[in-house]
Amino acid sequence: MSGDATMRQFGATAPVPEFDDPAFTPFPVPLSEAKVAIVTSAALHRTHDDQFSAADVSYRTIDRAERDLVLGHWSPNFDRTGFQLDLNVVYPIDRLEELEADGTIGAVAEHHYSFAGNQPDTVSELRLDTGPACAAAMKADGVHAVLLTPV
Amino acid sequence: MSTLAHVFEAAGLSTIVLASMKEVAERIGPPRTLYCEFPLGRPLGKPGDAEFQTDVIRRGLALLDATEPVFETHPTVIESDETPMSCAIPPRFDPDLPASVDEAKGLRAAYDRAVAKRGTTSVGRTIGADDVPTALDILHRWAGGADWKELPVPGGNLLGVCHDVRTYYEEAGLELVEGPTPGGRAAEAWFYETTEAGKTVMAARAALKEAGAPFPLWFYMAPAHR
Image 1 (cartoon, rainbow over the protein chains, first blue to last red):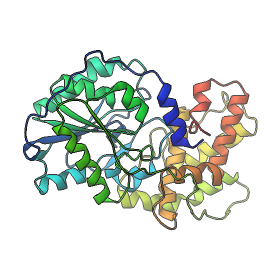
Image 2 (image 1 turned 180 degrees about the vertical axis):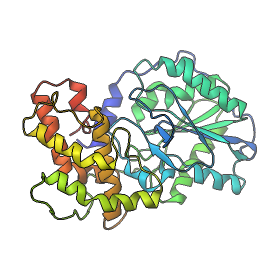
Image 3 (image 1 turned 30 degrees about the vertical axis):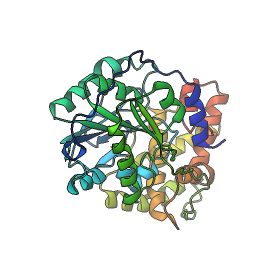
Image 4 (image 1 turned 90 degrees about the vertical axis):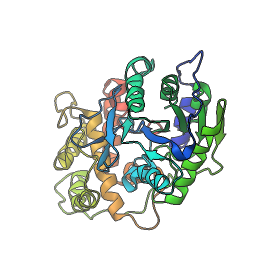
């Protein structure tokens, strides 16, 4: 079985968190007025940031202008040469800036965020601590919509 | 990602998940999902293809108009390519060295070019490029029967070392690759199936398993399907 098929089959039966009463936030403004942020689970960070540890539940903040990023994800089970060839295939910051320039979206957020995709099974810290903290930071920045890119 | 979407929505943010694992996203059920069956690790699909990436984002942004949970699928499927990328490996230089150590030294110039071009490197979570040959020498000795507890890798973190060795090779290999942009996993296949370093990592992994090392220590030295 191929590597991607193996991981997708694993994901099909792996335990996942349950959300009994999931929230749904209606989009509050026209897209052309919306501020958009990217949150990735690729464990991207700047070279001089603290590295992600295995099962790290924290996140790193990435300034909009930052492009010198490294990939600190601990799973060996995905392709990383796409990122090496083109940052945007994981973190599409240049594409978002183009959509801002042509008026499709209102603004690109000043800050974007990176988590590590390999989380502890309970994801309790993500749900109760670091996830809400990241949301509060985006709310403080006036973000309306979040594009989540997985790794 | 799907979990974070729920957390963010609860805080009053509208979210779009570019999901790469269909069953996971279906089961967690984030509010707005665009399932993209692209190679894992390439959520926007195609490196160097701005038009395609923009199409993915536009389809995602279109989901913001939904008034109730929505799950759509991007119409393009991109399979990973598990054929080893075509990449010339330097010839043997010092026959007195283990083949993987000699090979890693021979790739240094290509690695340095890659770093100069990109301005950064993902090598360095446990060891830097200078220590890659040393690490391979130790893995080579493990494969030959040396006791992994008595002969630790530089930096002490085996999985970090394995990431750094593979990343060193992939960053160097992308400088040497011939032909079109390698597909997802083509570099992985090149590393584990054709390079001496990849074979050394796999041999050391087998030796650790045989020696009764803890499962997480040897298993995550390479992708699960290997």
